Every structure is written in structure tokens, then in C-alpha cells.
Image 1 (spheres, one colour):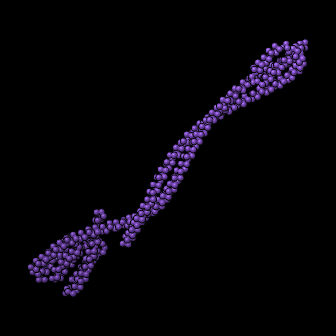
Image 2 (tube, rainbow, N blue to C red):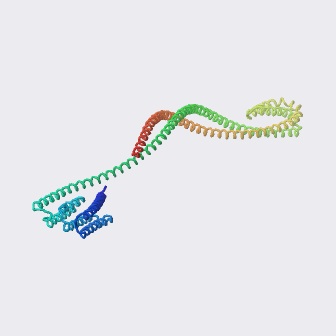
Length: 500
């Protein structure tokens, strides 16, 4: 509580205290007025004095009542009460002398003491001293007071005043301490109430948080269980994956071996293709040579055919030399026939013509001996020359066919060479592809082995994590039980506080 709040609270307490004391004075004066009225009408006194005293009592009581119940000048009511009582006692002392009037000053002290205020008490002491003096001065002889009695009365009056002042100071100190204690008590009670309220709110909040933590712990326990199952499944999957990777690694090794064999076979195939290319080139060269030879031989055959035709014409035109020419024609015919046979059988035209030349030389040597035969065979030579001409034409046609076939063969060899070259190029491309595949396969093999190793390490790590998760699940179960126990204790504490 701040200083302003304490001052305001203290002022409120003092105001309530003054109000209660004013109420007490009003009630006391009301009783006193009633008793005074009864007393007035029991003593022997004139009616005017009685009426005056009654009116004065009622006026003082009315003024105090109006101020008190009207909540006006509440702090002035003590002085109004002392002044009013002093006025009543003054009139009473003047008009109704009595030895009992000596106690009026002490009555005023008692009224002033009720307020426990220094100013009020001093005012009451002065008013009481005035009434005591007035009684001694006005009625001392009448009531039989001597000097010693008066001194004694003043002594006791002063003693009472001193005692009352001291009592009032002590009482004020006690009242101040009591008020401060009350304020501190109220402050502490307020603080205690706020602390208790805060404690209840904190306990309620803690209870709610404990409940949330309990729910979260339950959910965590479920999550940990699911996580543990998931880790078990993952571990199984990793083990299976490791086995698959090992299988893949073995398959890749087998593929590498097969690729190595394929690479070797492809090398052999390339060597065979190169041999075929070389053979094809040689065959192409041979066909070219054969083409040239057949072309040359065809020309020679055509020349021989022309010569045979000329020879037949000469035989027919040279009838006068029939005898000799018959022999020559017969041998020439035989020579031509032999030359044709040799040309057909031999692959090389030179050898055939060499034989023909040799035979011609022999015929030249034996021309003399063959004259008779030429004559006898001239007609046959003529017939044979015709047949030979036909045969030579047939041979010429066949040579043309052979020439055409040779051209086709050369084209085929050219196509074979092109195909062999294309196959060789594709084989080289396949060689590069297989080399690349083999390199990739080796990389895959190394990666598979590395993945298998990593998979094994991962499997071991997952097993450790699974064991850790199981440990966390057990610890979470223990913590959950403790949280539920604390939550129950918090709820009981909240219920106990609310019951209080």
C-alpha cells in the first residue's frame, strides 16, 4: 500500500472514530438531559429557572444532534458540546447553587476525555476550571467551602487534569499504534488476500498446465511408441535394403564379368571383321583383275572369231590353193580348236596363246607333211570353220555374260566392303559404349558396396536410436505418473483453498 493510500485510510479511520465519539456524546447528553429534567422538577426552584434550564439543555442537545446527524462540522462538535455544557453549568451555578456543582468541572473533563484529543482535552480542562472557579467564587461561602477545601479541590483537579493529559497522550500513542497496526494488518490482510488469490490462480494455472503437460506427455508416450515401431520397421527395411544392395553388388560384379567377356568377344569380332574387310578388299582387287582379264580375253576371242571368218572367206576364195590350204586350214582349225579349249580351261590367256604359238611352229615344221591332209580336209575345214564361227560367237556371248557377272561381282564386293566398313564403325561405337557401360557398372558396384556399408552403419544407428526411444518411453511413463500425482495434489490444494 502506498503512502497516499495509508494517509487516506488513516483519515477515514479517524473520521469514523470522531463520528462514533460524537454519537456517544449525543447519546450521553440525551440521557443527561433527561436526568436533568427529572432533577429540575424534583428540586425546589422557581419554574422560570427550571424552564430556562430545560430550554438550554434542549437547545444544546438539538444543536449537537443537527451537526451530528447532518454530518456537518463533525470535528467542531466536541467544542460545541464542551461550550454548551459549560453554558448549562454556568447558568446552573448562578441560579441553582449546590455543592454537587463542584463535580461539573470533572464532568466536562470526562466529556473532553472521550475524544482523546489534546486540543479538546485542553479546552475541556479550561472549561472545567472555569466552572470550578465559578462555583468557588460564586457559591463557595454558600456551600460552605473554606480556603483549604478550595486548595484541595484545585489540587485534585490539577492532578486529574495532569493524569488525564498523560493518559490521553498514552492513549493517543496506543490509538495511533493501534491504528497503524490495524492499517498494517489490513495491508497485510489485503496482501495476504491478494497473495492467496494469486496463489489460487497460480495453483489453478499450474494445475491446468500440469493437465496439459499430462496430456502432452500421454501424446508424447504414444508418439514415442509409434516412433519406436517406426524405427523397428525402418531397421527392418534398412536390413532388407542392405541385403538387396549386396545382391545388386553381386549382380553388378557378374555383369562386369559378362561385359568383360563381351568386350573380349567384341575385340575378336572386330579382328574377324577386319580380316573379312581385308579379304573383301583382296577379293575386290582379284575381281577387278579378272574383269580386266576377261575383258581382254573377250577381245581376243572376238579377234579370233574375226580371223576365223576371214580364214573361211579366204579358203572359199582361194580354191586354186585348195590342196595346200586344205592341209594348212585343217591344222589351223585344229590349232584354233586347241587354242579355244586351252583358253576356256586356263585362267590366264598368255599360257594358251603360248601353246598356240608352239603348235603353230610345229605346224610350220610339219606344213609340208600336212599338205595332203589339208587338201583332203579342206571341205571339212570349211564346214568346221562355219561351226567354229558359231562356237566362237557362242563363246563371245558367254564371255560377255562372264563380263557382266564379273561387274556384278565387283559391285557385290563393293557393297560388302561398305557393309564391312559400316559394321567396323558400329563395332567401334559398340566398343566405346561397352567401355562406358563397364566404367558405369564399376561405379555402380563401388556405390553399391558403399551404400551397403552405409546401410549397415545406418542399421546399427537405428538400433541404438530404437533402444534410446524405448528408454525415453520408459522415462516418459515415470514422468507421466509423477505429473498425474502432482496434478492430483494441485487439484486437492485448489479445492482446499476454495473451501477455506
